[in-house]
Length: 243
Image 1: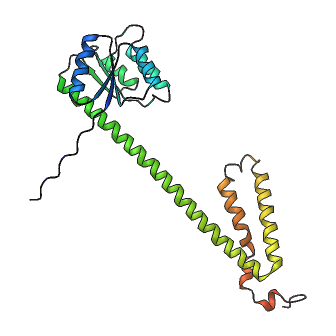
Image 2: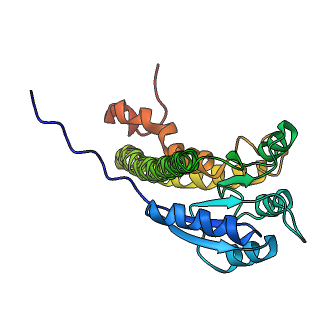
Image 3: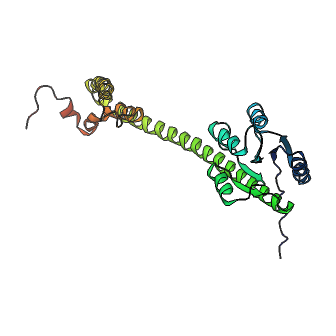
């Protein structure tokens, strides 16, 4: 049997604990630090909001509910209102264990709800799970951004090839007849002017995007491309054409 591949090392995160009870805060700090995480602490909602506003964001927030001056629900609502912290994952860690309290936490955007007292193993497993979920989401978002950049680059390449092809065909038509070449330039200018005027019409504005108008103007010289296949004895015949 082939040897088993070594397990991928588990990542550690930065976690902010927000709890006004010094004992609960200290015990939780020790538990998370022992698991290898970097731990930050705040003893009130306003202190937590100030830390989050002025420094790098943690990977996760463990937030108590019952605190003076500003409870945990209010803190989370403030976090969700600000674009910088709107997606910050928050776990409520509180002595409020009622079903309505838990439902209220999730309704405000918490990713999990741990009722005190909970076994240390339970707390660690829930924290690890939420950290891993957040990192997976970050990786997927980064991959999506990379794909968008790649798609945009490929579209530019394809557009460049299309423009080169259109330009070559238009140049071929112009070589057959100097009047055709000048006519194509004038027609392209007319189409650009007409498209710009028509964009002022409400029902045409959604259709006449910058990309659409650009392609339309670039394609205009092809309206005379049929002359490429006309024999010179006809195309350059002096006087009127016979039957």
